[in-house]
Length: 429
View 1: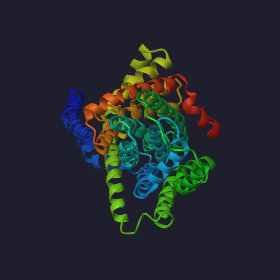
View 2: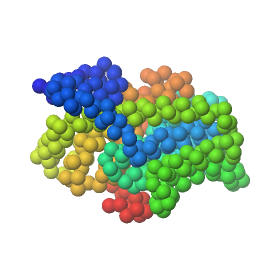
View 3: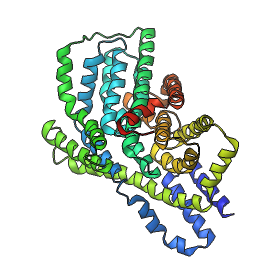
View 4: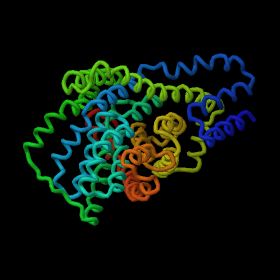
């Protein structure tokens, strides 16, 4: 009876659009109250805090701060200039520049919404001046923005690593392959669509422009190299890498690009704190939610049902893809990871699937979720920046979503897309 009330209260609040952290916290507190175990009720607050009180979790607010510091400067404009100097002369120049700039900026921000917002705010005005269909460019921005959560530093990868006790360094590396694959698919679609519509480019490829823009953007692009290189070489842990990235971003913004002032810092710190607090609130809620699930042996039961009915690891991955893809349509990546990763991880181990690969697959799924309604965070960002109605934008973006799903299937069927770099650099199997 208690389990039924727990489940109905959770899904009832979820359907009423109550924030996911509150859904999990209140349904868990209601379950504990109904069971009459007052000792467990009395330690709810300490358990809630214990879920957030982790050295690994400290990487999340530090990566967020690093991204916000660079986003507040002129990093997005410099990265777009670099992309434009490299591929702006090609047919479909603007869509290719947009996609490549999102990949560059994803290596700085670690956030899909931040990537779409930063790149879109610069590209959107240029699209109209260049004669491109505004709906088309908005769709490119919306679908390329989620690459930001695949290419390191990736906040969802850190969340998955903390939730499942998986190597965060290996997880960060595992997102590079899927991120590049998604970028190539979007670029190819933009090339085909531009050819169909007759879009071209009047720009010329000039080596001096490449060297000039590359030199200016190099300080921003050093951020992911410092993070990945530091972790891979063993100089510092992922959390220490996040701290170094935050300090480095602060120095670059204040003293090198000089687009930040000390007066800007309180506002940036406040913004980063609010974003971090939102994620940490979800983490605390999931600790309580997860404790109830473990008490009722839900993960063990789910694993047993899966093993009794599914004999193939590939079939398990396909079903997991479907579950996570739907979850990504209904909630943001971090809550979805914290909710589903611990549930599915016992089955992942039972099928002898690498938890690093499963983490890459999960984040790849959730990247698609960022551009698929009803949540579709980057879709809303792109719609607002480009002043395009959601109904028109959804029609334009669905063919790209279809291509991204094909990319997801390729990652599932060819694990080396995600695992080659972690295997080569860290010996991960």
